[in-house]
Length: 311
Image 1: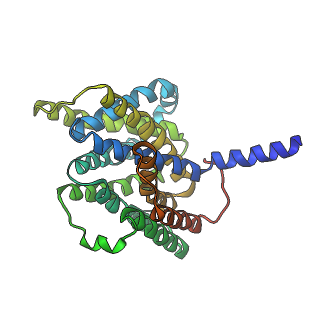
Image 2: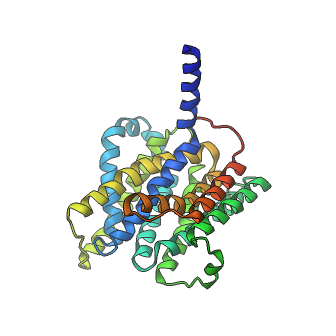
Image 3: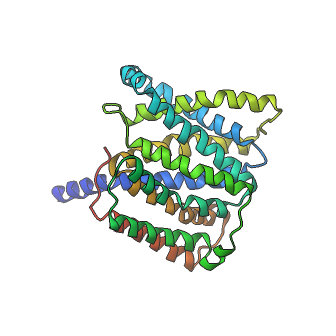
């Protein structure tokens, strides 16, 4: 009996700490970020929202991991270029583009454009990392992309032929290659530098890069509206969609690579529908189930191996 319990516990541990579970958690938290970001479009300017999001995240990370940063200070100083690049692409620029986009476009349009990210990551990994792309990976991405399209279009994919770009969509188009660059750069993590030290140092770099932009925004008279709901929203984004989500994403990419990890972004419209059902009382319909099945099928097709622990 004891042996069976230990065996089950061991298998559960492998699943819970697998890169796939980490990536699912990351995308779930980011789905909430899209909803909150859209809700705050009139309350907090995009630059202010992103600056305080990461400033609060940094205030959480630094006290917890200062000793590790000090321990690996030589590696961090030597690899400052890639750390700064991670801070610029994934921490500063990507989310500013997303929040600016959500001020003038719909979450549906933003998700349509974001759904192209896995293909951009595939091309980038092939072009810059010389990573071999298998046919199964392309097929899996296309299957999951079909599921994302079904979810985004509410089961009417041909209506996307009438898709029209607006100013917000252009900002989202800028965000996609930035996220692809961030995911690809993660694969070049400096050897010997732990994931959490890399995340903390890249967040620090991103915040420092945003400081002049933030004060420039203040000089232009942009202000944020502080109230109970807004403060809670920013705290959610800072802790769940920043500290936890990025830690999960970085671990997942380090374990299975940017190409396979990128496919999990197609789960965002599925989680968005689930969150809308849970918090807004919106109903789940047949197309949510069908689309979700396609997304998970595509991910499973590309990741046939059993679960393994994150590195």
